[in-house]
Length: 201
Image (tube, rainbow, N blue to C red; front, side):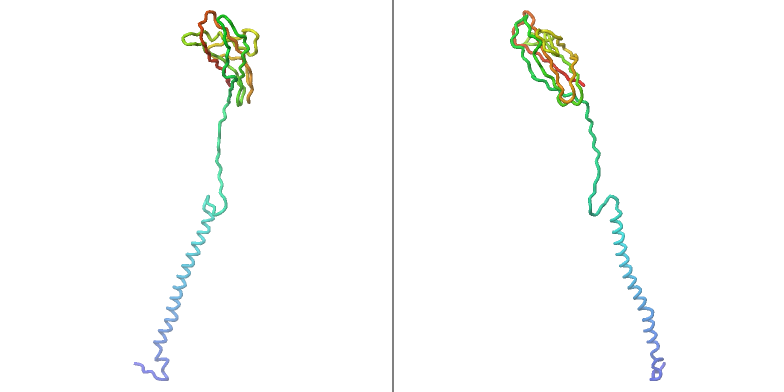
């Protein structure tokens, strides 16, 4: 065992000195390194996260942080050829006509290509005259594109025929005139007939 004296105090305290020196030279730097490494790791993680987040925000496709986004929609529509029609008046009266008598072909109906976007061809047909169980033929009605002073023109048919008239697009109009002859010995009554005017394109 070493006895310490005033002259040998340094030698006596050498183990303690070595222990302290080892602690200061090894463990403290080690602890500091570990502590600083942890701090650097934490700071690096935060910095990396912020960097990734920042660059990610800038690089996400189709996402804008602030500002305005816009997109386009394509629409389509097909507008077909169209023939409009408007007739005036919508009813005509030949008044009272005795059997065997006639009315001149001058009762006017105006046909208009209402809102049509193309030229229209005018067709015409009609039904028989009917009053209860009594009737007479559609052909007793005559039509013409001009007013006639007498009962004259083209007999009305049960199926559509062309009048030879055309109506311009965008409300072009023409007129048709009608006359009537009541057959001899026709039974009394109020007779009606349907006349169909057709604009075709």
